[in-house]
Image (tube, rainbow, N blue to C red; front, top):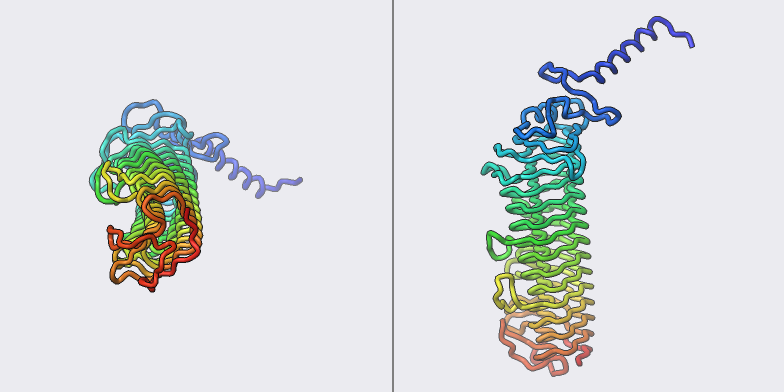
Length: 459
């Protein structure tokens, strides 16, 4: 091949540029102190004077490296080691990559650990981020605290401790995946006003108040997906009547999917939906809950609670608060067993039921075993409208099915259920807490024209 003068000069320019990149990249402040990690296509943080073995704060040097990586569109690689840092701000295209379990970023006690606001395309991968007992400033919501950010990816990271949340997102889209988050002073993950968020395959444990929070500042569609997470040992350190102590807590957020998670050992609920319409709670395995395991309450319209397993809780499923607009649900295919009638504070609260519903709800093909109060509870006082309970199996219960016949209570169909080994009766009518009928399973119900009770099998 003939190489003319123009080709030779162009090749020389390209080689000179490659040599400059290999030797060092010029930062915005003019310092040639960034080198590409050989063969990785990433910037090497040690070339910025950041030492994985240094015990002092290195936040300012790390910030320079982070800014360079974002400006150049190249990931920043942090070798194994312990880095004391604080006040790290992330810009567009920031990507920080470490070695899982070995690259540790320790909060040194500044105002915040890591923040981003109004930026796009942030990646954190393979990092261990810890609070080391240091407190965040009052306006900081989490160790990782992002606001108004798009295309965020936090993957294969470990986040430990902190006086507030492990990860705090406000108006964020993206994903949190394959992370371990623990010992947060509030929640492991807090999201408010999400713009398309996936929370999947994480291990969240030993948090003081909640596992995952999916909230909105006002009622509306959220559409976050919460799936394949393992959530355990969640406390309710700040007390309350249900706002704390939950594996997954959804507040005002509509169209959220909580699917195929393992949730256990929570002070209150495995999944609690408050004022979130069109949410789906499906395929979750739940154990050892201090209150109602699966809850849809207060001002929701539309809920599917299906194919879940609950073993050991104060109650199984509650779809309630018709008085506040809670209505419209399908509850099917669940297995609920070993209900205890004892709430998390150790007192009897007349829970101990398998399923409780109030309005515009289908209860079908569930299996309920060992419910000391009732297998299924339909309505509460006058708050009963258009419910069906069909094709369920109820074993070992105080009452098989209890239905409200209080003044003002609406219509219900109870048919084709199998009810066995109940102490007080198969199907009983109640006004509030007081049973006021005999067993309606085989009795004349002409005195209650709003009820259809037929073809139930009782033993």
